[in-house]
Image (tube, rainbow, N blue to C red):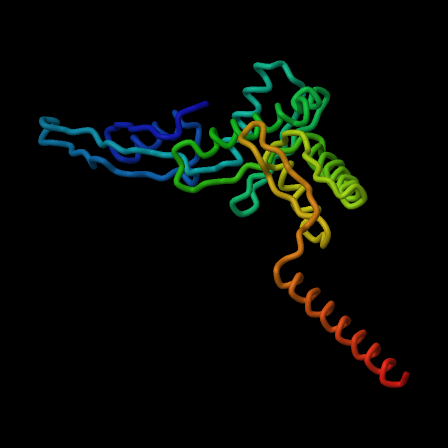
Length: 238
């Protein structure tokens, strides 16, 4: 990838700036300029000093991502295209094309690695951080739907067998999908156990809290009291 900052000298400030822009391949409205030395003509050319400037391309995560992906795919020989869009601080990247499937990997592991790598490239040395969300031919949505269906089916199993279920190790993203799918379920609860990369989700029946147990005990006592009153009444009548 090309340099984004350059120090350049010239007879005048404008000449130094123009030379820097040519090297960076940028227009004047795409850069920030810092004047290091305005230079001087000297007297009759004696003691003349060149002007010096530092010219930096403004941070553009879209351009950085597009350039990196284009160069990487060219080296790999993959026939794919990347659609990159910046929404606030979220950089959305959608990859499609003839060879796109080869970039997904088992359970999206290759895709996740590519997303992580792109995040490092985009945010390298930048104060403004952009969160990268990379998808390939809508794989994440399809995987999300599969995981949600799995979560609902396993929750039913836990309810019917009253036994805890442990899922296979998953990425943090996939674990969040499972947790989110069952967070509204009043019968089961979920939590994660283990350490990366073998951390997994556990689905189990919810335990009644102390408050619920107390309520049940009060109701039991009330029922017993009512039964004793009825029995006493029968004895008196007898």
